[in-house]
Length: 384
Image 1 (cartoon, helix red, strand yellow):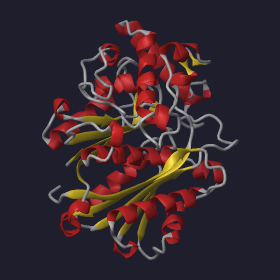
Image 2 (cartoon, one colour):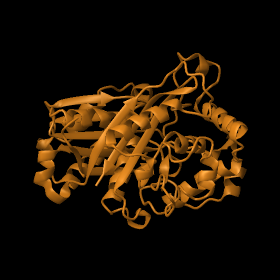
Image 3 (spheres, one colour):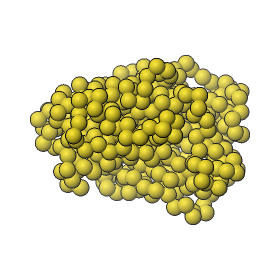
Image 4 (cartoon, helix red, strand yellow):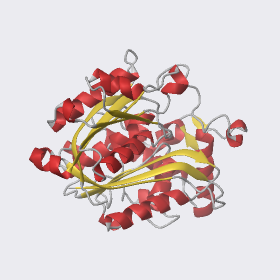
């Protein structure tokens, strides 16, 4: 890709319970905030991409993106609706990034919105057509198996997993947009109700309602905006898993492959990163992502967090937003919110959680288990 892509604006509806709001109203609010932040008029948008993972299942709704953009007064333009499990938001960003890179759009507005605090939600799983799901391998059980395997293979301590939840809650305390901000201790995490051994409730991300939006623009539009061009979106890689992979449950092959492609395309490596947002739906997920993203050697994720390397002020802060564990996880909005967090650090507006001197950041998301691998994985590299 030859054309540069810039983040010109962003907006977010804080994640939490929004009982009286619809998916469309949440998405439209985040989009308005993003456009206002960019300084661009809605009429400048030439492509709209909307991410949502659950509305069709919960509400029988489809083509919600058109409703969101119509609420902004945008009609007649190209609008795409994207569902890709937890990577729905980052997949929508990937589509928009490709469109701006290729010159098909000068201004793309990407919106992700989700309503998850609803009684009929039930268990999130990989679908009733999957044999593993029918046999009981719902999402918490799958991650619990990974945690048990990592403990068995590498001697990882339960306290190491708990330390991730404690760290991310400490980060969330500095983030006014986070869902849970009260400090917790390792002892409290261990003593929380067991969900799927060894994962207790405080090691599992909460469901949430919320929305996030980003305005991506071409180089020429960014030059016209001047200082309003927030950061560059240098690389976006989206991949699917190798479902016949027979490696250990303590390894995500797709993490390594997707990150490797992103590093190669960006011309850098994990040592060049200043800040990372990753998919910590469960504590074991973040630990495995340390290893898959190359932040530490395989098997050393427990030691990495125990040494404080992933804390603010550590070697490579991970999830300064509080992550999914504390910020919340409205699935369609999550991947976009991760990029917003990185942009705030690259532009020195992250307030008390600011990673000083941040120049390169990475946003990682993952969605949909299948066998020993994942259905979708995205890695986005941004710089200032």
